[in-house]
Image 1: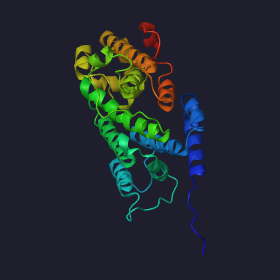
Image 2: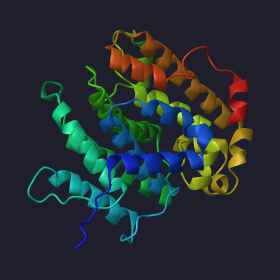
Image 3: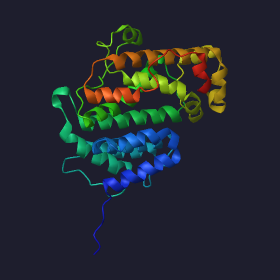
Image 4: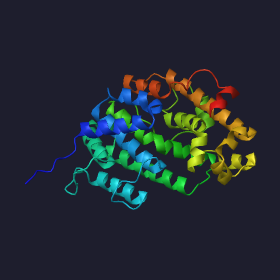
Length: 298
């Protein structure tokens, strides 16, 4: 009788790394190179989470054995919730589920309960955020400005806290954030770890046309109404966004907010692992204030 051979972390990680670089080497080359030097729990978390994000965005096929994205995500969430109990099932195929299960195994011993860490809940919350993003995309939802900010927070904060735990950092992204106007008035010392807003605003401008084409609208509802454009028309012709004065003004303002907060956060006194993460993720965002020339590439 031939013994069933389980996938190894090393093999699955290598396959996912190669697949990601094959799809878009320019976009993922630096990230893949940095991850090669990171703790195993972080590498497993990133490639597992990236796999989930790609399926949710429609860039990766739904894994075999599942009829819907919802049923697949529900399965992943269920597996995490029972991990470490008698109900846990060992994942036996190279998959996002395998990577996430191994990531949780690596990260559980790193939980710092005094800081409120809960590894399993962070992964569950990340997957729930991805599920919400999936429904947002397929339903072509147009959101308010506050709903968009909340989507940024949910999409990024849990992944960033997983990263911070993997790096044994002494800082965490809080569960709530102050209004934008208050954040802009804070000193670096007062500013919480607002990476979700910094990255959300920067990415939403830089990826505006790509997102619109896929059914994701990060343009607030009132602004969209003021622009005179409709979301269905923008999906069909995303380049219209660049030609619209109201949308251009919004994009420039969001870039300014992102850069101002990034510059301030980089000045904050942080422990070394947190500082390194902030510096890496905000490279290219902090610095001089953007001008209309910065909008020509989005």
